[in-house]
Amino acid sequence: MVKAKSAFVCTECGAEYRKWQGQCGSCKEWNTLTEVRLAPARPGAGSASGSPSGRAGYSGALSREVVDLASVDLSEVPRMSSTFGEFDRVLGGGLVPGSAVLLGGHPGAGKSTLLLQTACKLAQQRRILYVTGEESLSQVAMRAHRLQLPTQGLKMLAETSIETILAVAEREKPEILVIDSIQTMHLEDISSAPGGVAQVRESAAALTRFAKQSNTVLLLVGHVTKDGSLAGPKVLEHMIDASLLLEGGADSRFRTLRGQKNRFGAVNELGVFAMLEQGLKEVKNPSAIFLSRNEEQAPGSLVMVVWEGTRPILVEVQALVDESALGNPRRVAVGLDPNRLAMLLAVLNRHGGLFTGDQDVFLNVVGGVKVLETSADLAVLLAVVSSLQNRALPKELVVFGEVGLSGEIRPVPSGQERITEAAKHGFQRAIVPRANAPKNALPGMEVIPVDKLSDALEAL
Image 1 (cartoon, rainbow, N blue to C red):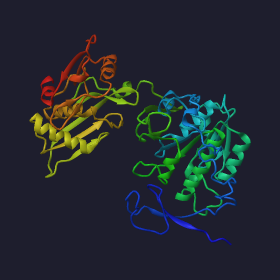
Image 2: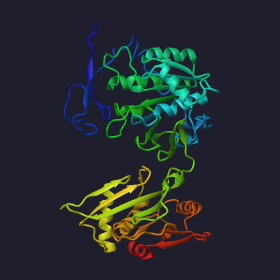
Image 3: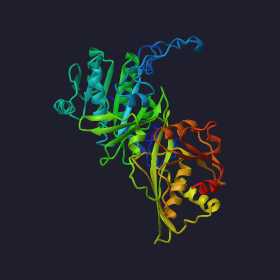
Image 4: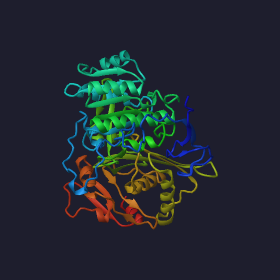
């Protein structure tokens, strides 16, 4: 009997060690090493004679011949539409044959619903195999019936064994293979429980290897941890071609799909969906839902234009400045970086002459949008000033621009497109960096270019 070998694997970066240690030498994280049992070597694996091994052709290229880069075929691989325009946008234009896509999200976000809707619609014209490891076939059928989806042509399999799934996939030869979820899958020759580091890593590797070799689109559902990151070893994100995160709280009917990694498109694209009784419905004009404002303008409320992927989106930012009863005033930012808020308040004090050191400052981006770019700096400061002075800003005003530490207003990319998007939604005034001001006047839009923070405060 062969003795089972084990190793210690870092759950953050995937580095392996022969014995346990407190800190990972690769990523410098503490207490991230987990003991895993290694699968026994298969016959002929890694032999010098060149015989096929269990890991041969991992990237899909079975030929071992060396080719010149100039001779590689540059013809674009035809993509398959997912039937959702927002889904295709985040993917970079559609599903690429032979790609592995990991869809993560909190429980109840709608991961299974989105993939079931996609699979049912695509099954009318393509071969789809949907593998469920968390639900029974009757549960999936009940959900499809509740969502009023077409169920003819969709092949279903309730299985958690990777060996069985690959055998069925070899027989059915699907164009798209859906695995829900990767944390429930297991390999027979690995003794650890499903969901462990070794099981998730080896199961994903086997499925990805099959997808590359058979030119099949692989869609994996993944769980997330409490901090919102994908569960399982970090090496899982290195294996797949695209990592998408579906976000949205249980108290909100809107869901945002954001790309975290994409080898076939941009990683900063954002797709917006609405959760209805009939399932997820794409929102083609996100600015309209994020601008559902009250008729009466309140102090501290302002609209800004942020750039998400390849399009501008108008969102509302709200600030509340109140006298603090604590020795250390609070700085709370929802949807923005709290550290950047503290830095902007220091700039406001030094170059704007407004002191907030004895005030609690609360900031919120309406609609649950997470703003990751610096074009929101100027809008954040003007919203804080509006709440501090208890003075409502004009409802037809829109603002964007980056604020430097010396109080200067820096330009942001795609300024002309941002102003045009604001004009489409009826805004009549815009405070923008001088370098982003359009050369030709826009009908019905007054553009106020500013160079310094003091200029923006005077323009209010």
